[in-house]
Amino acid sequence: MPDTGTSDAFVAFERVQKSYDGETLVVKDLNLNMPKGEFLTMLGPSGSGKTTCLMMLAGFETATHGEIKLDGVSINNIPPHKRGIGMVFQNYALFPHMTVAENLSFPLEVRKIGKSEREKKVQRALDMVEMGAFGGRRPAQLSGGQQQRIALARALVFEPELVLMDEPLGALDKQLREKMQFEITDLAHRLGITVVYVTHDQTEALTMSDRVAVFDDGRIQQLAPPDQLYEAPENSFVAQFIGENNTLEGVVQEVKGETCTVKLDHGEIIEAKPVNVSKAGERTRVSIRPERVEIDKSRLGENAHTLKATVREFIYMGDIFRTRLSVAGNDEFVIKTRNAPDQVRLRPGQEVEIGWMPEDCRALDAT
Ligand SMILES: Nc1ncnc2c1ncn2[C@@H]1O[C@H](COP(=O)(O)OP(=O)(O)OP(=O)(O)O)[C@@H](O)[C@H]1O
Ligand SMILES: [Mg+2]
Image (cartoon, rainbow, N blue to C red):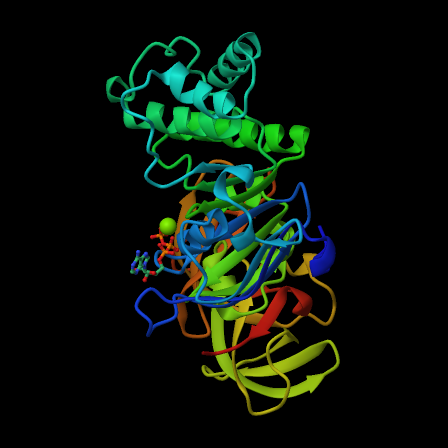
């Protein structure tokens, strides 16, 4: 989904900064525009500012600098109950004195929805999270994962326009988590709900989102659809953080249009796509995905460079083979090959030649 101008953005962060202590900025110059109906995920290491951003959008924290807008109106001018935001936070506080059904009914009562309609919506929301039979229980009589599911149902029951979710599936087992991932995205798309979702789990981020904002150190390092983020990381942090990645360090020798030559510290010369480098003499970290490396030269173009490699470890993983090699001084170089009938299984100690297409090898910053 393209970045829309601020004017027609549904959610907008404009040069937002946040400091809790008046000294250090935990959010530094955040700019973000979300169109209506978008599913955007904030992904990043612990402490990078994700929850802080959600809290500011929800109105529980104020920005130290900059502005946050909802449908073109500054959030400060909209009273909380008029924001129509559904929320599931890291500490999902259900009302302890109410039953599960009463917890879900509450946001509907506030919105003056009639009794029979309320009961229908509550039951549908409970069924969605597979808690249909638990309406009469109190939160204290539920497990952590069950409470989390009720919190999720409560955030969605009134069909809000905007939903904020902070690690909503953290306490669930893998199977239920995957089912809920599907339910949440399906529901959001069907009802046209705009979602800001926070997770540590990159697979979750890649599979659920229209766009992912990768956070580090209070800044968005890259904001892109999942495939772009994985295939075209713009800097070394993103390349390392998303998926598995091989890196080789060296110095740029020449930049010529869409390719550059890099002299690796180990001595070899390779070709790469200049992404974050612009001229000869710059240090660079080249990045190549394990599944883009070939051990069969016939699968590479004529001009592809090859490097000598020594096999260190071969791991059979069922659908794929994961082989660890020593390449240009890097003993943690990993390649992944599909378990096809004609695929060779490499043995530790074996000497091979590996290669890749220059466009799959990205010359990034060496910070
Ligand atoms: N109420 C607060 N008062 C002071 N500092 C805070 C407060 N809340 C968060 N911080 C600090 O702000 C920074 C960002 O915290 P935040 O909770 O936004 O991170 P996060 O990206 O959500 O991390 P996690 O993935 O661990 O939930 C951290 O360094 C944290 O210690
Ligand atoms: Mg957090």
